[in-house]
Image (cartoon, rainbow, N blue to C red; front, side, top):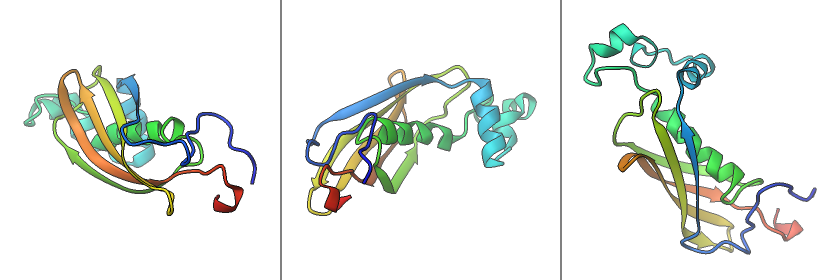
Length: 148
């Protein structure tokens, strides 16, 4: 197996309570690109006039766009390169609007070293408001070549 380069915390080094985060301001362009890639062009995301008539009183970002920030933390930081997503639960708590600064946080909640499974508490906030929360299970990379 080729040695994994970049940011990786191997299963042997993970500890419960470890956490990492990423902060990103969601832009109009992010929403446009996500709509293009996902083909989700719901007008609540892409049409100002329509969105003003909704309960949100304006455009909001796709919820999965915020969830993608959690994926970025998992794939780049905790555990990082070589991690394999197995499962994610999500509860959307509040909208994210263009211009909002989203903080995605991932915390190690439990570790099964035998199976290399790591349970992660996941959350996105805008200021003090939790906009998304959930739990992920990932397969963490190992230094032991025979374990992958």
